[in-house]
Length: 234
Image 1 (cartoon, rainbow, N blue to C red):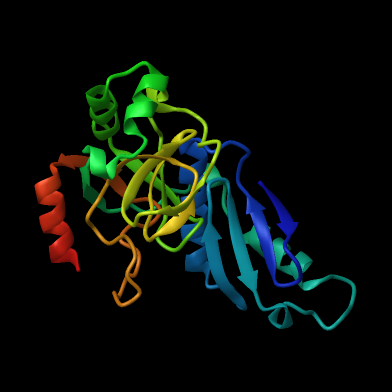
Image 2 (cartoon, one colour):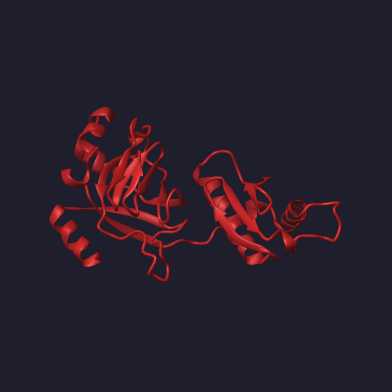
């Protein structure tokens, strides 16, 4: 575990070097524990795949001398307060079922992707929807969930040419992750389906439908059900 300054109002706690399930779980457990400490001046905790961004008010971390910076004082406090990370357990997330239409109008990249992977279209759908994913983190855009681990048979790099517009609700894969675009956004992931659910709505008490630690299963639906659920969600 190491620390790096991020300017004079934030620091980065590094919990590992590889975005594997064990490291991601350790990051969540550390973030949960830090939140319970209620450290003075800590304004926000931002867990990612291998790191936690800790935003703080430096004025609350001065000791009256110039000997040590607010960053050094806060890091010392965190090091002193944290137990062995191996003893921490992350909080249990919610189980979510996400309906997905994998039909042609919702899956622009599915035919080409299946050919590249040496699989049939139905095999890609079966593999993608057969497992339970963990929400590793929310990033890139509000409500965008990085889901993993992706089955090794579906792992491939991002598209060489990103799209300037990806429809809201698009379900995509790239590298070792699956993801869901919460709004119409640019993006370079391979589009293999679309959900009618609203992943992010600022008017909700909890704007993001998914949060780090949640468990996700994709449930295939046809185009007719997609349109009906999409209409109900609006």
